[in-house]
Amino acid sequence: MQSKFLEVEPRSFSPLSIPGLSDKAQYAVNAALDAMSTWRNEIADASETNGQQVIEKMAAAAKALGWPEQVVDTVRTQIQSVAAIQIKTMDQIMEVWEEQLKLPNPATAPTTNMLSRMQSPSIIPAGNWPGSGSFPAMNPAQVWLQFMEQWQKSWAEAMTTLTKTGKSQ
Image (tube, rainbow, N blue to C red; front, side, top):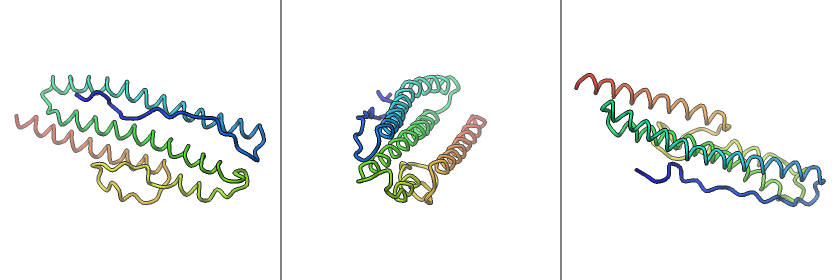
């Protein structure tokens, strides 16, 4: 059994000094990025702790049912992918904001590039999902829905295979 459920390093946040912004705006920006960084790290920690526990319990249940290890391996991969997408989405949002804030006058700089990068499908990790790597440009909510549809299809296929395997024994 692997030692870590999710290989994610904590993300530290260092308050930004942003020339040209009022103290109020700088405080608001730093508070927002700090909150997102904290949330992201909490998700990573919870995914590590809870994911490992869930997989251990599912492995015990699958073994008791006589199911192959492939069922648990597939579930582990899918749960890890969901957690990784969520964390990578948050990282991407923070990186885009930080880049925008490094511009000479971020308050008045165009946000077109920022918005374009946040709608990029680059957060999708390569995997065993049908059509992976061929997602059209979409916003993160659309990516999430697409990902969950594929997960549901994969889960249904796995359960159908198990049902057929169980009936033939």
